[in-house]
Length: 258
Image 1 (cartoon, rainbow, N blue to C red):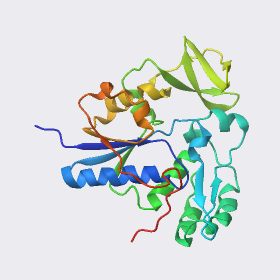
Image 2: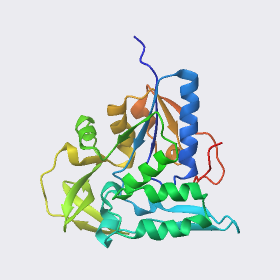
Image 3: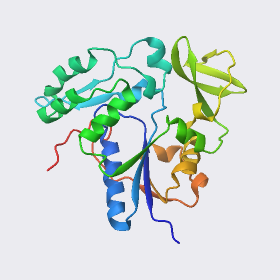
């Protein structure tokens, strides 16, 4: 029997209001589903650790000027090295941010934002996307999910989530050692510790193969940035579809549905 279509798109948590390019990926995936049937899978790369991923750029509703907000984090180690699913949001951040939002978004979204009680950055973003109605009927597969990791294939380049100074950190495995990148040519080598597949997530260049070994998609919606590094030869049986164009792609998507 022919496999029913599995239409996938991937993305890190990309702002507590999603960036517009993520909305475009969702629109593209839904259009493909309307044409082909099958299911849509959102590969949510919540094990990424870069705090810049969750920067959220709004336009002032009166002046049109851009303004960028981001999560606050409990400490420097967590901000710099913890995976996004482990970056805890300190008390007061949601309330402080909610007071600023009316300058940028409709009051409907301010109220939805206030209702999100997630304790970490990845969960907060995902819950906000759901409250905006973006993920209805879409299955979410998370790279930080230990069960998913155990099912995934082995890859030569990867990160390992380990404990360091009381925090979960995402360390690159290089030449048999776990390293944290401090910036430039500076690295911190962690003490050796045992680890297993439930702690492993892929490096960028091996992400497609790792994801595909679990998701088994037939179609993949490609973002503009992914074209630079995506190794299509790792999924030769997949049809790749460019995401639909959208203006101001790096800014926050905060439209009200008609």
